[in-house]
Image (cartoon, rainbow, N blue to C red):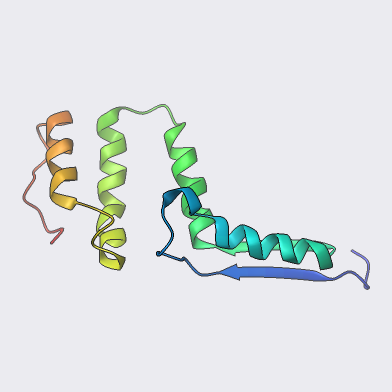
Length: 109
């Protein structure tokens, strides 16, 4: 790295007002502006991390029941930020159909 290079770290907070199609729009706008001026740009974004994680999880060889287990482990955290985004009871019902051995009454609420 040359001592004269400009490095910008973009720290983007989640914007829960945007819908799913615009999930990363805010992060990308900030990143694009930084690319114009910097030699190196790093994006630090919870939204980008979650989108990447969901993409990676979606491509792992696992059963539908295992996918529900992962989803149910993070759904309460998402619901605590915005309860309109996640219907925990419906997710539990769907999980029980896939895996009848999962208890639907648990400590999510």
